[in-house]
Image (tube, rainbow over all chains, first blue to last red):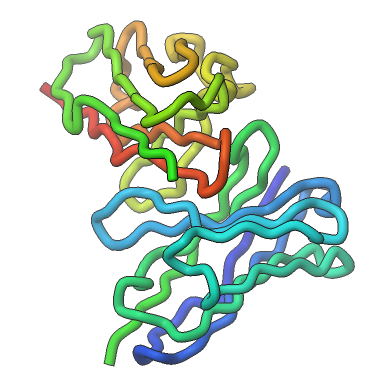
Length: 117
Length: 107
């Protein structure tokens, strides 16, 4: 069974940094691209970033996070990361890790990031 | 970025009703469109990919159609488990984008 378990969500002050992790199991992690999607409280879904399969040589970012967030992967640990810097109040959201297959075909349960002073 | 617009934003329906949700893209996305269902406090779940392909395990009362800029999700006979929010998403080009969501409520 495919499982994606996010961790690292926390309360952080504006301007601060945070690293999210997503541990994957139940599939051959290295052959799937991975993505992060977020959802602000009471709002819709917003795609954040993705990373290609294999070495992760190709990455993409939403305009709202480009230059502040960095996605990476460690296939030896079956884990994908999202490094977030210069955090803003508008980054407050549940962050979902997800697998790309037929579109976004498996999702984690999410981790909450709150940016507030 | 490609804008995705869903209609309606809210839909009130009864069990057994046929329900249709529309999603329009601001430019052609071919058939690179997915539909997701989300229930409160839960992660989204994929229903349809490439506009009309039913994800394995999804009930056959769900169907998708369309190409280019106009797409529909149809639930042929609404069941109690189907009351949720539905999102379309384009993955034709980056940045990927979602529609604003359609909440299906009990009438």
